[in-house]
Length: 130
Image 1: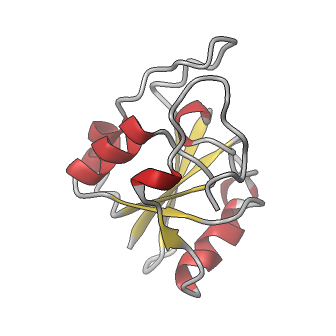
Image 2: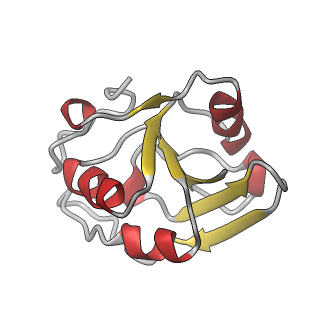
């Protein structure tokens, strides 16, 4: 399974997980079968004060054959777009990318449902999706 984890830096498995998918500066892609790792800058990261940001990630991730995204939080628009592209979205705690990979492997990551997604804007609270 090829998974995508939003991350704050480009340190591979030691990267710190971003609290919110769309605002992550990087995506760390991990193939859990081959252990191959790829780090890509988030092409739609427009972090800033207002809270609204571009969210067109599904095409970029589908092109890289990502099966699932593991995140601590995500807006409803991104969730819908990824699901429509056939990409599973799961939620797990925070920490390092390696922790998120383990949560998929041990089954502790859960599917993110629309009711758990944030509505967007500046009111997002990290960890509120768990």
